[in-house]
Image 1 (cartoon, helix red, strand yellow):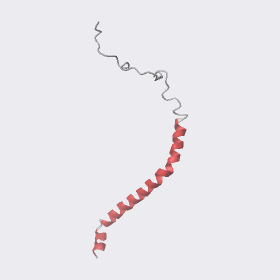
Image 2 (image 1 turned 180 degrees about the vertical axis):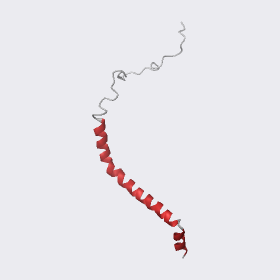
Image 3 (image 1 turned 45 degrees about the vertical axis):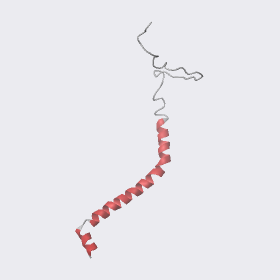
Image 4 (image 1 turned 120 degrees about the vertical axis):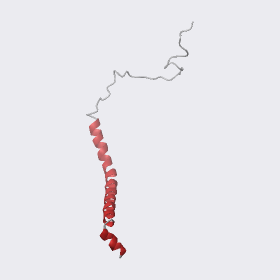
Amino acid sequence: MFSGAMGRHFGQLTRVRNIITYSLSPFEQRAFAGAISNGVPNMARRFSGQVFRVVPPLFLCYLVYDWGKKEHARLQRKAAKAELAE
């Protein structure tokens, strides 16, 4: 007899043997378990481990950028153009 649906239902599309999968219901999970007690100290530890690798190059780039902006502003003045023309 025709049941009105063709093929198999989603989740039953194929048969896989010798593979066992386990899952936990979303209602049984605790999504933020230990987020404050474990997450914040872990974030602080990871930040302190990376800060000395990231900050010095950024600081150096900022100094170069600041120098370039000041030099550009100095060269755009009339007095600087008169100095260069002489």
